[in-house]
Length: 164
Image (tube, rainbow, N blue to C red; front, side, top):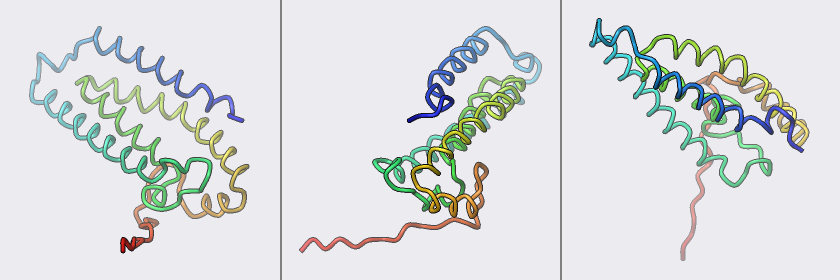
């Protein structure tokens, strides 16, 4: 059973993306005419953040692919924080905000993300607690919910495959 916030997360995100896209297309940066160097720096920061987010989301997907709701993943990016996919999504959306070259968009994105995703995370954590019980509870006590902590990083054990 999906909790309500999780169930509509994708639809809400799509509607928000369309609204943001409309404002990006319909607005123009005041900085664009006044200070081209500043807008270039904002754009480069945005591209870098989108690149980091893309790589981070791929890294997370490699760990969770095929195991979601079947096994609690606690290694790799999931040892840094409990919600690395959401963290990297925030970094990417923030990057898109910077690419608009309008300072209002990154600020708006952070506000919207901060208002919405805590509910998604709480809903998802209730579901994971119901599935994994005390194993998930121990994990929540050790690993931060959203912002990564490098000191908790754990690599998975390596397995040697014998092909002979």
